[in-house]
Image 1 (cartoon, chains in turn yellow, red):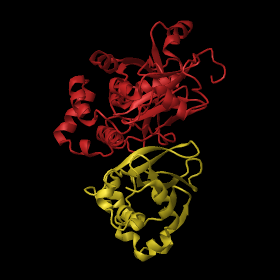
Image 2: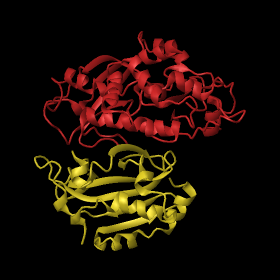
Image 3: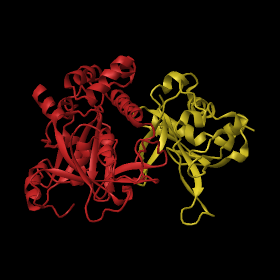
Image 4: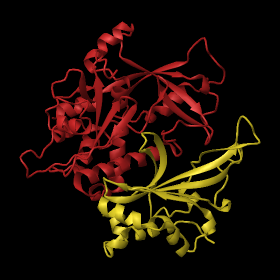
Length: 175
Length: 295
């Protein structure tokens, strides 16, 4: 459990790029990191070898990138991880061009190499700050405290990032 | 209390669903393809998707027996997509935005003798923003509902342990109670989650002004304080002070499961009687049809 004020303080101090590199992940795959008070948004590039084409018999589509959002749950008083997968598909109006659309694999655990026995991932309806509704995969936070532990509270968020995000990044994402 | 629970649980909605041209094998512009179905208010509309698709199977532009991972079906009301992940009754109360007392008169004006909600079934490769695509059929819906209960349990008790300790058999019995409309089984399991002295109350407020929105307010119960039990008015006034200025406004009301709720009732007392099948109390804000300010 992390109070919101402490979460904000730790989020502000969190250098995601440093954690990424310390964990031996390829810097080129980290496309974007930005944050505000309660939320850090990250965009990463996957390697195609881990991601099968979602529908080889229909459109040939490639996973383009993964949006990652670290935010705070006022219900659970814990950080929460949201994920959104994007695929590029030939544009219907002009097949030479590609457009991005959300990708919902039939088995998201397999696609992201997330251990099903460790994490629960579900599609969730998320209302954003601007009032728009979006659909994200949510890694459920209900037993966060048991996983992260209460020792070294000042490093709670960076430990949480290691457990909830870096632990499942598949080897193909690593340099 | 049992009688109210029964009335809430047994509440139903008449739906008339027409097939949008996007989902038709050929464009039947002359004759709309429709089906009528009565569903419980307190359920997800997608429980009935298979039945509805089966009725439309001769007109659909794809074979429903085959896997169509790139195609999605969804419902719309007056061109606004329905978020299936809320109880259909709460969507009806919110999206039609007609106060229960005004419904009869308004429906008669439209020459409808039966209260019917007219929806459209759409199909496409691009699902509208914010709609959760159904990838894994009933299993996905069941898991979504289970997580709503985990959340509700956390709000009520400060931990999810009560539901996390449910056995697989308990979860199955709970889910079956919702699907097979068995109130007794539902109450048995819901009562295991609901404490007599909750920390907070799980409530979702739906509002259709200026557009469809929801709020999940933080409603704390302080059992030691004299005024520690908030009323429905306290909650609504705190979340929407510009709409709920006084308890006595006839222009705006709080509707829950199709019933206008007295604003002075304690929110947890209302929760005990009107809670929905996902562990939350869904409140809809409805405006009088004479109210020009918000309609």
